[in-house]
Length: 345
Image (cartoon, rainbow, N blue to C red; front, top):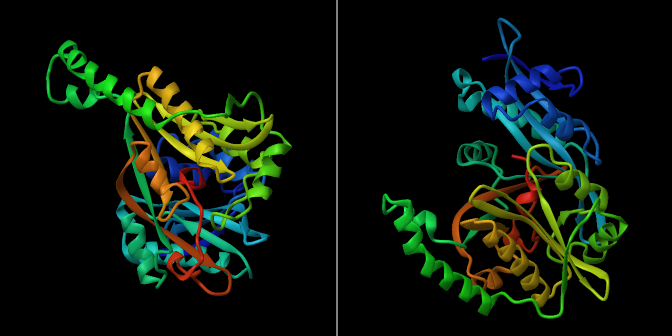
């Protein structure tokens, strides 16, 4: 068992944390990601905890919390999204994981009015159950096929034959989108340069009408998406009479793409126009599948089906509140509005 679990200093313990994260999470969890995620966040530096080996003092586990400003009702509240939880392979016992996560949450929820949320894996959810923290909702990934090439390619060996067989199906998919995804009266433009104050104004004008959410200020959007060191995000803005009314953020790697944020005033035609433009761009780039993750319920669950998305796997959402240990679940009338871009793990 570890000698202790201590609060980490993101500056002084930088090397130790990077070593733990790159060894246990991903080789991409290196210096540049650490600088961006732990130190450059406009809402403040990250908080972290380290579990150390009793005999050597070597770091064997870590957990982190990344600050967010949350819109809850008509007010702004401090919050955190939890992430970067990892333990070295030879120490992955439920007992150590429980100690580490309990130390993290006990310090976070000691602040009144503070909210913290997490999108835990199945293994992490077992830890929350031991801590008597129930799910506050579930995030569902919706997927939409744009091209049939990969699916058919898995069935036939010849790439040329797969292309021939996929061509009519691709045309059918395109025709179906022409019928369900149209832009009627909206100007959809690429966001050139950084997001400006109009995005902050939009965030507060929409507020938390869809549920408690991250404050999507211009400063936050520029940091979270446009300056991301590992993922190239694209932002399309919906304008009506020159006024910003909504936007979509998406990314893609090779044949797979995902919408990570979709935000703005409630307008079916606007949402449809934004998604239609994303689909058009991605199909022209040869992308095979487009995904979007949304909580149940979400403002556009019905629209997703109409747009040709189908539900796939789901994952839990956990919310903890300062002074209570766990916030009410969505079923109790306290909805949340979170998307894939709101996670950090």
